[in-house]
Amino acid sequence: MEEQKNSMNIQWYPGHMTKTRRMMEEDLKLVDAVCEILDARIPISSRNPDIDAICGKKPRMVILNRIDMADADLVGRWSNYFKDRGMAVIRTDCKSRKGINTFAPAVRQLLSEKLQRYAEKGQVGRPLKLMVVGIPNVGKSTFINSFAGKACAKTGNKPGVTKGNQWIRLNKTLELLDTPGILWPKFEDPNVGLCLAFIGSINDEILDKEELAAELIKNMSGRYGKRLEERYGVTLVENTAGDGEDTKKAWEILREIARARSCLLKGSELDTKKAAGFLLDDFRSGKLGRVTLEVPVPPETSTAR
Image (cartoon, rainbow, N blue to C red; front, side):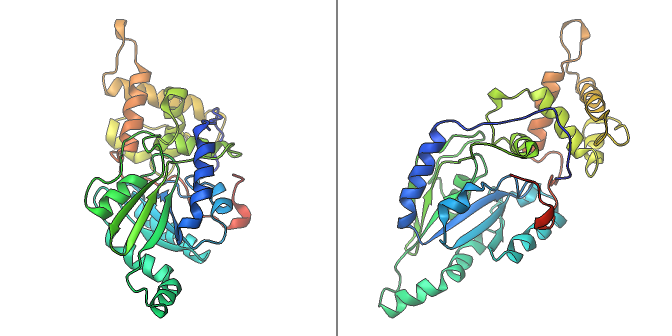
């Protein structure tokens, strides 16, 4: 994501996530590899840096999920970004099941040496076991259900639906351990907290949705400003992001959205809170088109996590 100044410093690390981390560390010895699911709209912000420490030297796979909501060009660039860093990568959209059929072959490729050892020991058909990890509301359970073709794991459109680790046998050769979504204790970069809030990985109840919507407008106004104009019939002020007037202009646009959507309180006062809800729901459901808020950058210029 292009660097933005923002007025929000979002932090969220409920106590149960510490317990979840301990469970993951204990169960790691039971699996052959770890599958980390990322949101293709925010591939860096949706990577939990603690996963590296938890997983150690276990083979890893990255799944770029929700590709149907992400900028197609940037999905390809992000895929190459992770591949260049030695990671196995597949791209999926779990709701449409796009890319799901690439998962099993990718797992076999990732664990080809282990499969060869099984064959040498006469253990052909022994199931491979993977732990599925990721931030809250990134689509872990939906991914598992899409692959299985049935509702094996509990899903929802808010963080915290998966409460505990759950083994799911997909077929005779593959078993997945679904884990609750976890974040990390502190977001060093405020933009990380923003991105996580944009996609719904932070509990909405702790957020000021109007401020969050204004920040989303600022972040979309450069590359994706036309999407806002087309969706809501508003006119964006040129260069709404990056200067001292960006927040003020973003609030003006939010008021325009409220006016365009007839979000009114008593006395015809504009209901910007309701308009903010419309905007965030539209972004999270993909109604604003294919949007990616982060662009791959060389490691030496990456921001702190």
